[in-house]
Image 1: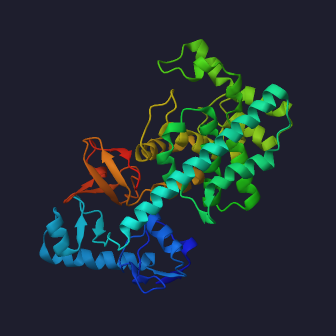
Image 2: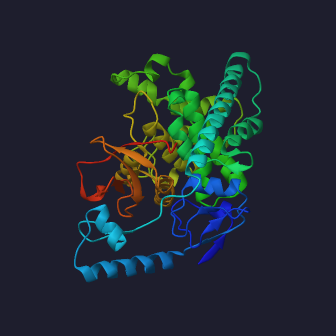
Image 3: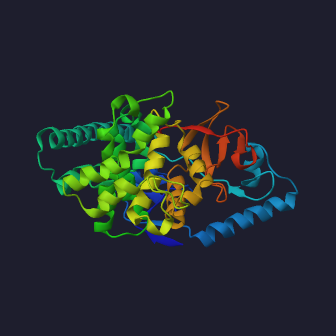
Length: 398
C-alpha cells in the first residue's frame, strides 16, 4: 500500500482504507474506486492523505478473485452472479473486473458541488475567451502589441479554481456551446497541450511553451474566408488548397509580429505527420518540431470531439479509438502518453452507447483503450468484443 496526498490521487485508484472527515463522518468506503468528484470532495474536506492500493496489490486481489471464480467453474453474466462471486470476466476470459463499492455517503452533496463548479468554470471560460478574442482583434485591426506572457497566464488560469486543479477533459464535456469558434478551439488546444506536456514530465517553461504553441497554432485561419472555415458540405479542390494554406499563413503572420520560433514552427507544422503523410511539406518525423508534434495530437483530439463544421463529431472514446487507429501519424511516446492518460479521465463516467443504453465505464481495455467495459444495469458489456457497439457520448457526471 502507499499513502498519497490528495493532489497525487488519480481517477481509477482504489482506496485501501475507510476515509473519514475531521468530524469522523465516513466519506469514502474501503475498496472504492476513486473518481474526480470523489477526489475533489476529499480535498474540500481537507483530507490530508489517503492509503491507496499499489498496482501489485490490485493485481493480487484480482488474481484471488479470479481464483475464487474458477472454483465454481462458471463465468458470471449477471449482477447477481457478480455479487455472489465478486467479479465479472469478459467472454474470452482475458480480463477480470473486481466488484467495487461505487456508493459513497455524500453523493448528492458532491453532485451539487460539482454542478456549481461547472457553472463557475463556464463563466470564467467565457470571460477568458472574450479577452483572447479582443486581444487578437486589436492586434490585427489596431496593430496593438500583444503581451503573450500575460495572455498565456489568463488562459492557463482556467486550469485552476480556488487553488485546486480543474479536470479540463471532463469540463470539455460541458463546453459544447463554445466549440464552433476558432477562439475556443485555440484555447482548448492550448490547455490540452499544457496538460500533455505535464504528462510528458516537461518542466514549467516547457509546459508554458507547449500551451503557447497550441494557442496560436491556427492563427493563419484568420486570413481564410469565414465561409470556407464553416463549410459543412465539403470543400472544392480550390477551397481545400486555400484552407490548407492556413499553416503557412500562420507562420508568416507570427513572423511579422515577432513571435518565438518554436511557436511559428508549430503553426507551420501542426498538420505534418510522422509517417510523412501531412502537409504543407510532407516532412518525415525527424524534421518535425517536438512542440508541433504535441500540438498535432491535441489539435486533432479537440477538433474531432468538438463541434467543428469540417469534422465528424466523435465521443472521447471514439476519438481515442481514432487516434489508436492512426498512431503511426504521431510521435509514439507522445501519443501513447496522451491516450493512456486521457482515457483514465473517463473511468467511472456515465456514457450513452449507440444502441441508446446508458451505463458506466468500469474497466479500460489496455489493448483497445477506446473500447472499455461498460456496466449497464445488471449487464457488463465488453466493447472490445462487441464491435457493433460503441460509446456514442460521454455524459457529464452531474
